[in-house]
Each structure stands twice: as C-alpha cells, then as structure tokens.
Length: 209
Length: 288
Image 1 (spheres, each protein chain N blue to C red):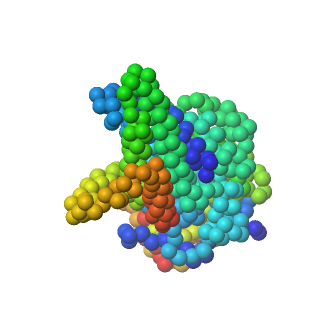
Image 2 (image 1 turned 180 degrees about the vertical axis):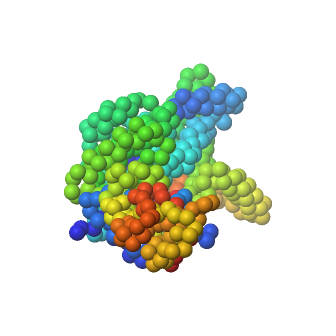
Image 3 (image 1 turned 45 degrees about the vertical axis):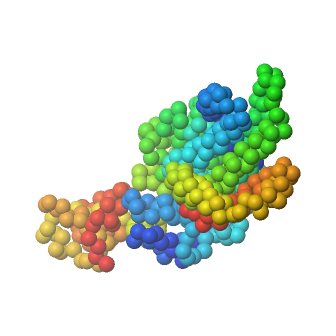
C-alpha cells in the first residue's frame, strides 16, 4: 500500500509546476479578501488530487494495479490516505500563509482565523467524501458531474431543513458548537471519510476494468 | 507434468451477447503457451479473468496450485504482467517505477531492473509519455521481469513494434523460459511470433477453445490442400476439417498431411502457417 501512496505523491511531484501555478493564481485571486484565502490551499490540494484519478483512468492503471500483489481494498484505502496526507500538507501551507499575513497586518483575529481554517478544511473533506465514491463508481468525468448535483442537493436539503427549524431553540446547539468546534470539526471529518471509504470499497470490490 | 494454471468450467458473461466459455484449460509449467484468435475472440477476457481484473460468473482458476481469489496477493507476487494499453500513469518515469515497485514486490530487484533499462536503452528520467511505443513496451517488459516472476502473462506484447524490437523482445522471452520452472502465457494476433517461440498453441474463437495442441503437432501434421472444383468433389469429407472456396480453387485444411498426400497422390498438400490455420478455421466452411 505504501507503494500506491508513493505513486500518487510522485505523480503530484511530477506535476509540481502546475500545482504551484494553481496555488499562486488562486492566492492572488483571493488576496482582496483576507479571510477567503484560507480555503485556497485545501481547495488546490483537492483539485490536484483529483488529477491523479484522471491519469489513472487515462492510462488504465487500475487494471494493472490489480495484477500487483495488492488487494483491491488497499487500492481504495491508499487513495483515502493520500488525500488525507495532501490535506494535512495543505493545512500546513495555510498556517504558513496566515503567519506571513500576520507580519504585514496587525489586526488579525487568530482565533477567528483558526475557526475559518478548520471550517474550510472540513468543507473540502465533505466534498471529497461525497466525490470519491462517485469517482470510483462512474469515473472522474461523470463523478464531477455527480458532485455538482450532489452538492446542490445537499445544500438545498440543508436549506430546507434549517428554514424549518426554529432558530431560537437551537441556540444551545450553536453555543455547544462554538465551544467545541475544534474537536467537533475534525471528528465529523474523520467520520465522513470513514463512511465514504466503506462505500468506495464496496463499489471497487465489484468493479471490472 | 506440473501445471502452472488450471482453469475449470470458467464462464464469463458480458451484457453484450459475448460469453467466454464454458472452458477448462491446463497451462503446463516450463512452456510458452501462445493464445491466438481474432479480435474479440476472448483472448483478453481470458487473460483478465485469470488475473482477477474481471470477475467470472462461474468456474475455478488456480495458479501455482492456489485459488486465485483466496490467495490473490501470494500468487501475484510471482506473476509478471504486460497488458495492452494498461500501465503506470504516463507522467511517471522509469525511476519512479523503481521506487514504487520496491514497496510493492517483496522480491523487487532494482539492480536487475536498471540492468534491463540499460540493455534496452531506456532513459530513466523521461516520463513514460515521452517514450516511443517500442521503448514503452520494453519498459513494461522490464517492469514485469524485475521481481523474478515464475509466470509471465503477456497480452499482445509485440503489437505495434517494428520487427527489430519484436525480435529483441522475443529473445528476452526465450531467455526467461530457459528456467524450467518458468511459464509464459502469450496472447497475440501476430501468429508468426508464436511459430518461433511457442511450445503450445491455444486457439480461441467466439469464447470457445477451438484447438489446444503443441506447435510441432500443428506445423508438422496439419496441411493445406489446394485443388480445383473437380478434385474437391473427389475428396472424402472425413479427410479434412474445413475448406474455403476461392474464385477458381479450394483451400482445404487437413489435420494429417502425410496421410492425405498418400491418399490423393496427384494433389499437392502444403505445410501450414498458423495464420492460414486461423483464417481457414474461422472463415472457412467446416465439415463438422
């Protein structure tokens, strides 16, 4: 499995120039608004990771991978682990960027920033957790379309649910969230990814190439 | 005789009407087995079923005496594979492959791998995308050999290669088979390759095994009898397997060249090539 993780990381290394270009362009675009900058690295990490699926698909890597002494389960698992590694690297980059911003700007509310970073990171995990099973099932192109549909559906559903809830009564929940978000957010992220992994594994075990 | 691959009652169905099998096959150890058949006959389906890339509907496949589903990882440690259009993502280079495979095969031999690359003149730093088709194939072969496999499974390993590279590649396979424990399963539609190196020929058509014989048996005994319409009428139906009607003549496939040429003394029976055999058996009219 280590070999598979290595493979994805080497592929990204091979594409490093594009990765940096992506990152810089998005950072410049985000510069006008200090807060939005914190989503850029995690977002780029996701985009870059998706390209590994595209290359795999284009060169029919999966059929080859199955002939190696690796189980199908580990092929799926390695993708999830790689995505988490990239996600952690992206978080580190974000912290560095925020640190640099702090040199030039005095009035940064680091506590608020920390919450923002966690929130953005979670939103990317949520996207990935929905997208990976779709990619394993339908391939990258169709998986992306499925993602858009999925995100809109979830957003619509959540909107529907929240308008139905009397916000007065949820103050307790919001308070609880505000107090423990730094535990709750990573916890939710891990649970989502684990569920997503089991769904993907189920799909992949039956797949033919 | 030891068997490297044992296939029992295999059936693989597709949504389209194609079905492979039901077929049973034994692949003996220490030989080069050539798998021939037209496009869409089921060669790749058979290979992918053996390797577990496809999931079969029925049947049992054993490699080195172990069930391919229960002992997959253990078996695959000893198999080297070259598939058609299926390999590492093209933005990786030969060095990357070494570094990845080191963590995948217990018996990966970096030195051997780099020796092959050197012999094949493959640049280690260029990404796969920039290699020529021949180079790429040779890289795939080097990768398949560098963990000291006992079984090589090759799907069209020579297609698209020029004659010089093709001969080079065939020589590598011949060298590999010098070890008695080594086995090669080799699918191709370039049948002349197999006339040089195969010990046994398995001929598949429409998902069924049409012929499973040693190469020598086929090339020494089978023959092609060319005759005109009058002569054709005189030949016993039991003496031939298939025939094809040309504009002015008949090509007749016989399974015992010597017997037939003795019986019909004024007719000429030629030796056969695998290509003739394939064309006659697929396109010709069969007697039985």
